[in-house]
Length: 174
Image (cartoon, rainbow, N blue to C red):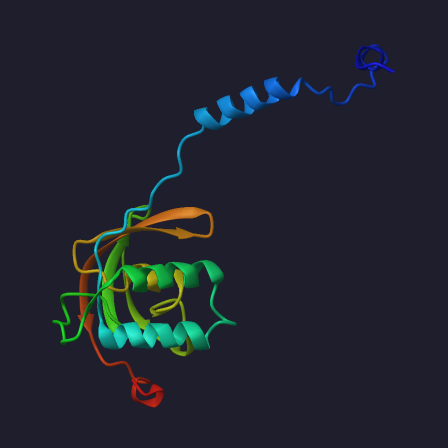
């Protein structure tokens, strides 16, 4: 039975176009799609001790970390400039830092402390291996980063930072 016969009877569900036409239509559709956005990633700096702690946390927290956050954090570690000496506590976000920042899609500022995952409460103590923590680590005041929270792009700007030693630090060998 031909497609025209099925259409006359109301039974046509799908009629294939010639392959060359399908390729042309697919190419036109792809060409007209907006290009994927490249996330803005400013230069970041990590202390060597933070790099080592983050790498260790990625290895030991493999069952509790979101795969997307782990991939993002690994990329951040790999692209960071690593410094061996201590850096001013107000110069960059590091493990134990209290950070004041603004989400560009929000109307207020927020202040959190970056901590190991076992100390996080996701209110004011943010896991350094979580999505937000991974975005903030290594930034300095005035820097903005774009990052992905599930399917939503977020833009966050660090307003201020101040490092402190958090309570569980010595227990974890840091």
